[in-house]
Image 1 (cartoon, rainbow, N blue to C red):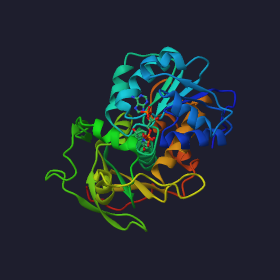
Image 2: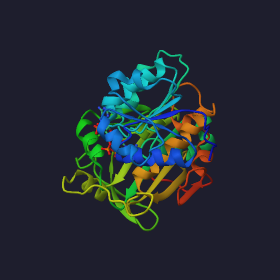
Image 3: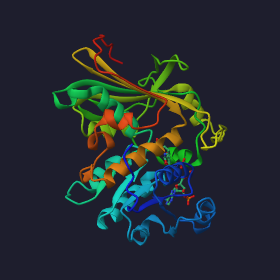
Image 4: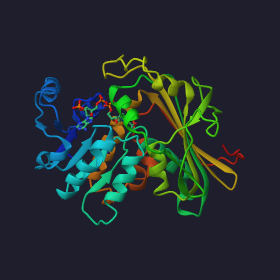
Amino acid sequence: MSIFPESATVLVYGAYGHTARFVIDELVRRGSRPVLAGRSPERLQSVRGDYPDLSIRTAGVADAQDLLAAVDLVINCAGPFADTAVPLAAAAVRAGVHYLDLSAEQQPVLDLAAEFQDGPFASTVMPAAGFFGALGDLLATAAAGDWAEMDQIEEISVFTALDHWHPTSGTRRTGERNTGPRFKVAGGKLVPIAPAHSQAGRPFSWTFPAPFGTCELGELGLAETICISRHLPATRISSYLNLSALSELRDPHTPPPIATDTAGRSAQRFTMEAVAVRDGVRRTARVQGQDIYASSAPIVVEAAARILAGEAPSGVVSPASAFPAEEFLAALPFEEFSLNTKSDQHSPSV
Ligand SMILES: NC(=O)c1ccc[n+]([C@@H]2O[C@H](COP(=O)([O-])OP(=O)(O)OC[C@H]3O[C@@H](n4cnc5c(N)ncnc54)[C@H](OP(=O)(O)O)[C@@H]3O)[C@@H](O)[C@H]2O)c1
């Protein structure tokens, strides 16, 4: 893990959210004293009960410039990011402050790329630096290895299995807000995908290591597809999730996550695997771990540490385009990270 520059000031926006609490804990654990920010003064005061040494700042995203005095980097944990990413990132860029968020939605990643396409500017803008988004991008880039500098990669697929998905209220609100088209890459271009349960989006099976085994998967348009498409030369890019997790997510009666350990993590287990195919040769990278919300924190905080250390370029980037993917993944505290870039199996196209 990179050393966190203690002199740098990090502001966590949406600080009283479920995922933000893991991000704050990770920052504090690594020696940072983040400023806690959000739009509700009461909820900020209540979260400060757990962090009496940290300061708070209150403003909505429309007044985000009021939050940024003497701040070096913002981590935006307030989703739906369709509502918060562009105003907060625009204020950050105007103030010369770096910006990261945890969007799993595709559209905010596209919106930020469009918003800042005229650059140049001094800040690093890194959307989707969480479990969905960054992790698939990092795994795909690690799997692709030196193919990233060559010509076309035929296919990149990101497969995720969750034993359960007990969604937070923020996840539910984000799903309800995220009604626009979702994309995969086909023929080297972003194209809309069919919903996972439709005829065109027929589920198929994929075999993960234990404890998941063979799962029925559905295709899902998530932020990693956009991140990967911005820096890897792939003809096809798709992302898949097991249908049992998707059903829980869509069931309004599924309860929210419950903490089962002292770190506040739920018992949820996950595995994510990226497969890159070129000339019939398959390369893979995989991680396994516990709790997708908690696991977003070390990813975004490691990215923040590296940005503050001057390791990322300015502009709109993803962790996998800014940092060496394999080394970045190895720095994260997953229970398992495995990489097979020597595989010569023939891969059936999914
Ligand atoms: N990429 C990933 O893998 C990943 C992982 C975890 C979370 N996420 C995403 O992160 C977001 C938060 O998730 P969560 O689990 O932490 O949810 P949560 O516990 O419900 O927290 C949501 C936070 O966002 C704030 N917020 C929402 N809309 C806002 C707005 N328009 N202006 C200001 N603040 C706003 C909320 O404040 P108020 O109460 O004042 O509305 C609250 O602080 C969701 O979009 C979720 O999908 C992504």
